[in-house]
Amino acid sequence: MRKATLLIGILLAAGITIAADGVPLDAYPKTSIAEDATATWCGFCPNAYAGLEIVHQNFGYDAFVSVRYYETSGSYGTTETDARNDAYGVTGFPTVIIDGTNRFVGAGTATAATGQPYLSTVEVASLAPAPIRIDIDSFNPATGAISATVTMYSATASLSNETVLFVLVEDNVAASHTHVARDLIYDTITLSGAGSTAVFNKSFVIDPGWNQGNLHAVALVQHENPPGVPREVLQAASTWPQPSYRVRGMVPFSPISFGASSGTQMGEEFTVMNTGLTDTFTIDVVVDSAPAGWQTTLVDGSGTPQTPPYAFGLNNEAATTFRVDVTPSSSGQMDYHVEIDSPNLSSPLTIPFTYFTDDLDVMLVDDDGGDPFELYFTAVLDAAGKSYGVWNRSLSPLSADVATNTNVLIWNAGFTSPSLDADDKAFVGQYLDAGKALFLSGQDVGWDLNENNPDPVWYQTYLHATYIRDDTNIMYLDGVAGDPVSDGLTLHIAGGSGANNQDYPDEIEAADADATEILHYQGDGCGAIRALDSVSKARLVYLGFGFEGIDDAQDRSDLLLDALGWIGPELLIDGFETGDLSAWQ
Picture 1: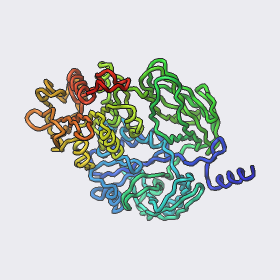
Picture 2: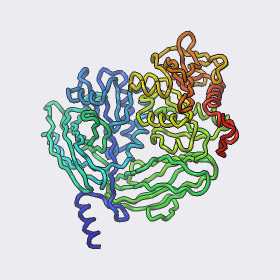
Picture 3: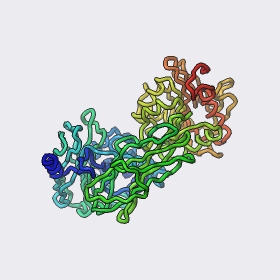
């Protein structure tokens, strides 16, 4: 007992939080950071400003901060902000990079109105456990002096010559120009062992013309790979004021899971941590959507089921754990969230989860950055009686469970950038290498993978397409006579009951003998291909435009169902559910 008491005392002295069961936490809640590459002459950048402001309205500075790196081609830029943008490989404005890895190029009026895709990205990123904690111990805006301590929480993680960045930020410089990066200071950190610390003392250069009352400091620790190329931001902190009462969550696993369609399925434990003053909280489980008869059970850290809303108290820096068990009664999908609240909080903490049964016909990947384009697909699937799930890509990258439990994937890339990021490409490549089927729709997939975030080898290898140009400006496409997918189709991708959003439909063409062109823009170029990979036997239908833009519901149904009939013939053949493959073609 004396040894355990001594260990806990050492950990507390080092700033390590002790969980409710007396076990030290191996992580600390993450502060997510958006780095906004911008310019005063950029016409679309105010949309990014407005979108990020919506994120700020939903999160305190303990969970989210943002800074702007202005280019010197306009006002407020410095050689340091130019260099930071260059290190990230920024080629267009605005480019918003969240936590070093989530990159969003461009911003439209929808971003300004909804905060998407930034908001959903931060909702997930802010729940990620960080191996370290950063405390800004002092900051003097008059002299620029700053002192910060980095504390290692993880017993297994280590930092080796990683980047530490301090950013001096001025708010309210001019109308619409705030969070302006004024000075940047770099250092490195090597740290390992739970409870170990590293202290930094730096000094910004203060211009007498800056408003000292509007100056704040940001500190972050970031991976670089290779050296000089910024990657994941592990943790951030700032001097902006934080509310006295606050609560954070940590979810060290994918919030999306698979399981059986009957029986109680045990969830994984997540952590709730009080980072503010001592408070009493309630935790509730809210089912957003589920088939009839499905149930949830809230279970506390001792393994005891509790009836929500369940009240519990936490001292400052104290934490406890919960899990949610799901009991399905049929095939399908449950979307639910945990809500932690207190009368002292300005808004509750919400933690979203999704549960899929492992017997679905199709998985629809909702990767449109918060737009409702998935509804164009689900309307067709519902009418056809298909069993399907909708994977919210903003919650989590696709996991190996998707490949294990599904054979047909519909990927709705919408009008996003990046259309497919590194995680997406890795998953799709493995999925197709395993001989599975993919229907991919997105008007900027070709442009993104060949011009914006170029990876033409992957594009040609897995999509069997060659990118020709970004914008055909042609709104009519014709099918190919006798083709099993497009025979008899004439599509209009503007107006009608479609999304009316086809600003940049890509022109593509078949890249190899495995691919066949199936839709052509009237008068000029190919708009879609299908491919049967000669090695893996994977089947693919790839639209260079957005499926959601098709103006007629019947045309959307005909195209999607014919495509599914070709890429996923097992959906229509007896034996699919039983595993009897004798009837498969």
